[in-house]
Length: 190
Image (cartoon, rainbow, N blue to C red):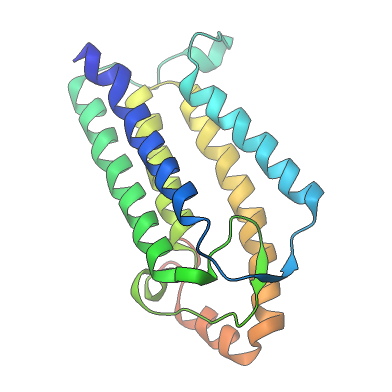
């Protein structure tokens, strides 16, 4: 079990990141870009979350305390939730196709995607990512994991609000209608 707890989660996340990087090359050109300071702030907060989740040797006082006792159930429940979240995110990324971008952009020939995972939530990549982080935090079982999830939620919430503003500007009424039909992050939760 010690071997799994040391290597399983890093292997899942590194595989996910490698896939993400490989897919980043096959996208449409952008016609509008997110400001660099916005991207920089997001990267700093994401790095803080990574440190909280994956570098437990850095002692953080009260954040090192356990939310619940360590056990097999929390490890495996966390692993299942992490895998499910990562796969949901990958499904959304694949479904979005060449319209995807790591930063907030409007692509040349941008299409409004409303099928597949986008019929369940408007931001399924973020939903999957947050679920995967929550699973990883559950497995870790410390307060630092909860703080990492909260930081990433704040980052993604800010990003999705900017995206939605740009989508409303670009797609007009069709995006407004889509927003009335589909929740942002949690299916059927308006």
